[in-house]
Image (cartoon, rainbow, N blue to C red; front, side, top):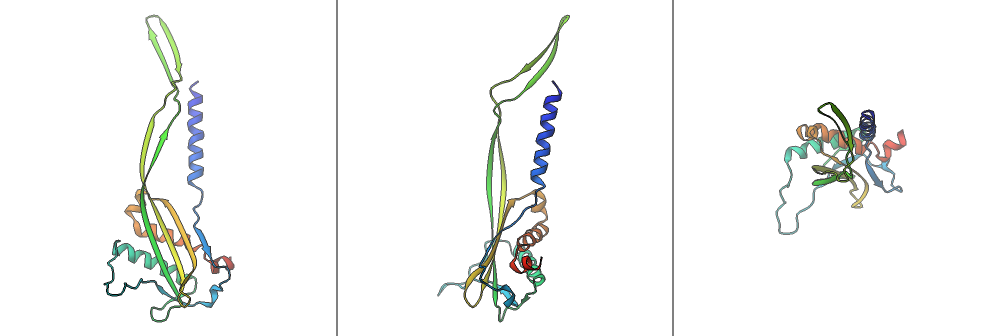
Length: 196
């Protein structure tokens, strides 16, 4: 009887490891009629302030902004583009979002075993209660959306998005997490897909 709970725990652990080790892949969409090899220069998109208003200060950490721009510039350079803020053919925009989420997990039943002595007698019992526990798990989910815009047509021609649970490691080492995320998103860029 002790072998059954151990076997169930081992199977559940293996299933979790299999799910966790599956590679993450970004969701992408792009205009398939566009010849991406016609572009050579890019810059970062900057929203123009409305008439009579000052430019809004960013609501995010400037250091994180620098990490994103460095990672995106590295990926764009690897694709053959050069950064040119005076005459860009492409504009790159990125958006980030962090949400607090909560999972509520409940188990429909639990298995309890026991062994006891009473005087000269001994007994073994197995209980199957029809109630289980409820567990609440709070966590953060981060999303990154990168858009590539044709500067002359002023329209999005490619976008990639990746969403995932933010781990403690990612929170403690944001630069590495940003580099990995941006790299995953650009793995499915059209010119990279053609060269593979």
